[in-house]
Length: 149
Image (cartoon, rainbow, N blue to C red; front, side, top):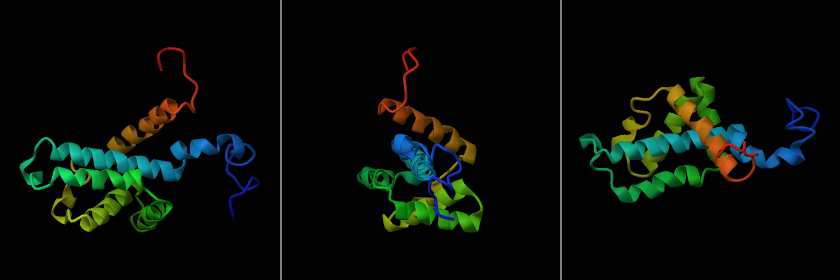
């Protein structure tokens, strides 16, 4: 069944899609995947900056390419995550696996086991979801509470 106004799960994506379309950049499945990748990448970079001896070979010049993984995130990337997820039956594990694939392409194979190091899925979700709200609010798409939001 194709997604349209009649098949959408709720009126938010159906009847009111014209008014809520901009929110998809923050609250869609695609957006959640992108923000999870952002959290994983920034965590990996933070580990590199500690410094951990095992990550001392990661050149700071690679940080820009790592950040490009979420800054230049595409629908094809999201589809790859969903493809991996179909095998793993685990959404955050699929994020970990695609990041390891991308790190190989960046010449960082020796460090890929530090993706998701010491983290749980809840660590990623409990950081990614509030980040989407924060970024959306800063973009002016959410009303402010009047309490210094």
